[in-house]
Amino acid sequence: MVTLDDLQVRSLGTSTIDSPLALYVGGRETNEYYVGETDRILYDDTLELIAARGVPLEELPTFEAGGPRRKIFFDPATTRVGVVTCGGLCPGLNDVIRAIVLELDTHYGVRDVVGFQHGYAGMVESNGHEIVSLTPEYVARINERGGTILGSSRGAQDPGLIVDRLVELGIDILMVIGGDGSMRGAHNIGAEIERRGLTIGIVGVPKTIDNDIPHIGQSFGFSTAFAKAAESIKAARVEVEAAVGGVAIVKVMGRHAGFIACYAALANHDADFVLIPEVQFSLDGDNGLLSLLSRRVRERGSAVIVLAEGAGQDLIPASDRTDASGNAVLGDIAGFLRDQITKDFANRGQALTMRYFNPGYAIRSVPADASDSVYCTRLAQTAVHAAMAGRTDMVVGRRRHRFVNVPIPFVTSGSHSVSPDGDLWLSVLESTAQPFSMS
Ligand SMILES: Nc1ncnc2c1ncn2[C@@H]1O[C@H](COP(=O)(O)OP(=O)(O)OP(=O)(O)O)[C@@H](O)[C@H]1O
Ligand SMILES: O=P(O)(O)OC[C@H]1O[C@](O)(CO)[C@@H](O)[C@@H]1O
Ligand SMILES: [Mg+2]
Image (cartoon, rainbow, N blue to C red; front, side):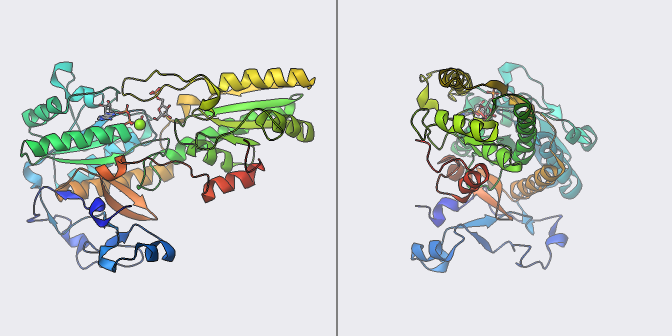
């Protein structure tokens, strides 16, 4: 069970320097739209959840509020900041890089910001990647492009070698933009820094189009990504409606979490079935996918299946392959379903026109939409405020509209996935009219 201790963010030391933003923060106090720096944000958000804790108010689990502080830890005139992007791409990476640089330069007067190329791999000196000077001019319009101007990578790196490089380059703060693996890596780097008694801060801006990082609210780029996936679902609907016995499978990313599939399906009402890793389904039997699909096509003429790549892995031979970072390489559920559906319709003597859509990388390589751009900017600003105030081993997030600082060990201790008992999955069932249970 989560405790207040789990949510305490580590500091490098006492902040003694007047913040250049002190005037902005000035006499601001908590109100509906702002959280004062001494106030904290509740973890629980219903009366029953709070009552069930059975502890006094001051012992309730609460988050530190994100945002500027009156005093900061690092002297802007002598502070050097490094930025790195790791893991898979996600819309908005360049917006985050840009906003970090602009916030540091414009508001804190930090003129020395450098970027590491190709993720943690580019931080290990022997790998031979040059650092890039990130000036306001250099990052001016990078938000218009998808991907990351710094490049990214997967694969394990030695935290000791990374800390050696930080020391050699005189980096005071490392900003890590990455997913769950990157945050585990960031924590290890932070632990090595602490072991050596150094005062280098590490602050993360969590990145995942799968939206699978817990406790941070929705991750940036997710909304852009599912909107892009929804375009393929719409196209699939057009195709199957024009075909005789049209059935489409639209496969979207989502290794262990089906958020993209759920949101893309909800974005329009074009999906008949949504299959996600969190909810098992059977192929056979009256309530199995094959019967239900056959019936849907007979009743409505066509059907669209939105399939998260991690769904139905129990139906196909397990793969023991992993990628360079140790992430499971999944079996081909889409190919398996295509075969099974084709055979099943043939056995039933039912007409079938099969269409397959795989928007794949196209959903994560696009630039962020306007809403995500705003979100990226605000997350980056929050991360810079925390970093300049000497916070470390933490990430920023936005829970129920409040920006929060969250310890990395707390976000890496679990993962975020679609709850079969939650209201998101209920909405999907309502929208698709697929049965409550397909197993
Ligand atoms: N368990 C781990 N412990 C320490 N470091 C890790 C771990 N997993 C990954 N890393 C480091 O983080 C980097 C990125 O990890 P990974 O490829 O898993 O992507 P990610 O950050 O999880 O992003 P995403 O899953 O959204 O693509 C790797 O290059 C590796 O150096
Ligand atoms: O081909 P790559 O770079 O390993 O990325 C694919 C994976 O990255 C993610 O987008 C994020 O982890 C997953 O949904 C997907 O399986
Ligand atoms: Mg990951």
